[in-house]
Image (tube, rainbow, N blue to C red; front, side):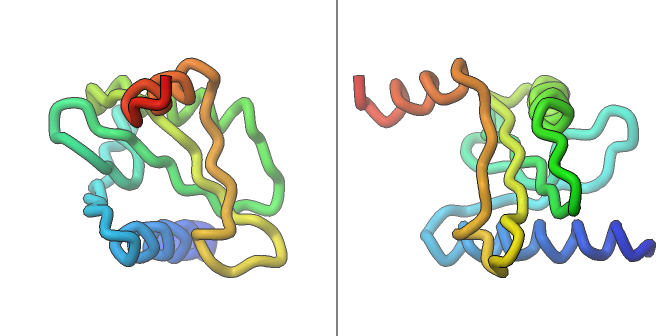
Length: 114
């Protein structure tokens, strides 16, 4: 395993463990190559929230959001987000979660905050 892949796997594990500690049941996803379906799924099997975990020194927000959106579509997901490492912080709870406005509106509706 490459150093970069090991770093990404470690970050995805931190996200997975944090969600589990919060009472949320994450499901780690296998690699699918060009039809990747994200790193972690949360929610129903038919329409999950798809999480793409990112731990890179250079933040490429537009690229990551596009990647998460494509991977959510590949997984028939409700929405895709990129959860990325915040420099100087070690835990997933301190990381950033990136989504587009349409996804944010969806979450507000689902939480009945309309």
